[in-house]
Length: 125
Image (tube, rainbow, N blue to C red; front, side, top):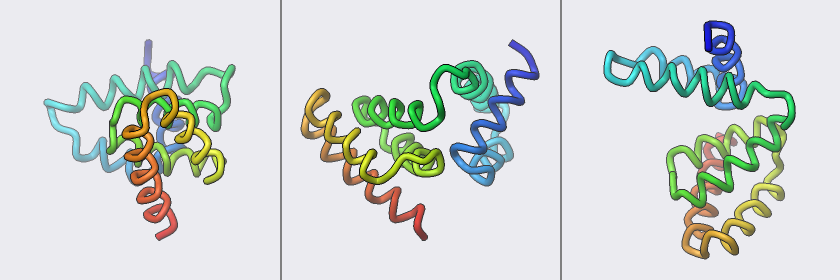
């Protein structure tokens, strides 16, 4: 894709997840995992999040639902914090996770609520 898509992705990724987190991820990358950091930044954040059709708030809510459904706790907590940065309210996060509980199963919803609460508490600290 190219450097421009990567650079756009890097900026979007920092705006959603926090500059400190993203810069630390790249600073601690080694020969083994650096290609993954680059792939995610370019394709996920640049090529997809960089599209104009959906705003960041909508993309965040979609991510919360998918990550909760897939039972990806680390990513879910990170994206709850990002969703808050993107203007998703606690009430909206709750509604997304209630929807997850119905469509993906109550255990997924229970875990997602617990993780989201932890992430919200960490975001306030």
